[in-house]
Amino acid sequence: MKKKWLTVVPAVALTFTPLYFQQVEASSDHPVSETEQSNSEVPERLEPILDIAPEHQPTLKIDSVGLEVELVQVKLNHFGFETDVDGIFGSKTEEQVMKFQKEHDLMRDGIVGAETWTALLDEERQDMFTVDHAISLAEEELNNDDLIFSSNGELYVDKDGRTFYNLKASSKSMIEDGGTGTVGFYNVYSDGEVILSDPMNK
Image (tube, rainbow, N blue to C red):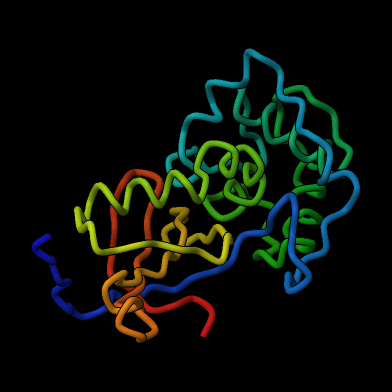
């Protein structure tokens, strides 16, 4: 089999913030409460909003109204931050958003922007974008039969609010020759973009 080798290109510098999982390993900085471990119950009429990536959700703040506000209120209640689910972004909702932001190490501004949306929808996004899916996207994009991919299982968000997995690419032939096999690391995004990067956990 003819072997294909990767071309080394400069890594893309991005600012990353780890997302917190429904099931978190011992190394997580954010303990998961019993409330977070339960499944989120989003009303069926609000489910279409879940298909929209966090970075494309509207920015919500005081006086915002609509289904997106209602979804935020549902999710706040799911995480234990009680507020009325009425689709109106009032002072109580703002207060609970700030408490949620504090618990998730986000800027406490009471505004639901990309990063807050990402944290609120973490469970749903994880269900839709799995490690196996990321590996499949990497295999399809790089199209190299000599490569095998692995991940630490963590879902990350970059400075633009886009979610991705950091995959290690290893060469099967190099492993067979007694080497470590590691040839690079890639950030794989849910939209299929694959970017050569550095390992997230060195």
